[in-house]
Image (cartoon, rainbow, N blue to C red; front, side, top):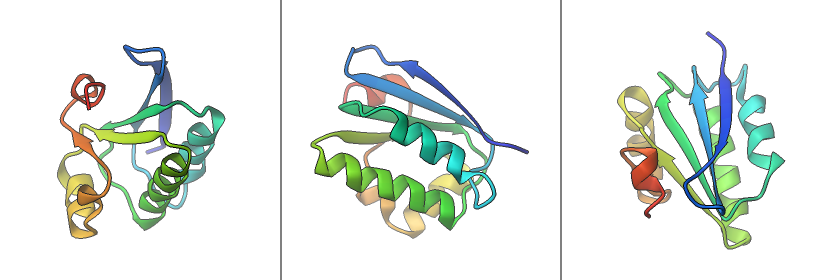
Length: 110
């Protein structure tokens, strides 16, 4: 299964939403990395509701972007995390670092 990333504007002009579909792994994380770097929005929401699994390489890309966004005074919110992806975020305690929301709509209000 391959990874696809759909990019759309959020409800506010300062928001962009990246909707990932498929696993985020060592074999395909560069697609997500490229989308993260394409634009520098004050709020980036990564919708993971269609991501069944993620490995340490995928997690690394997300953490790298989170740190870069923080340095610019920008924000990253993860939306729709569930199952194995949520388990990974909890195991690594990333859930206490990067804000999580149940939906994209909730993420836009954080």
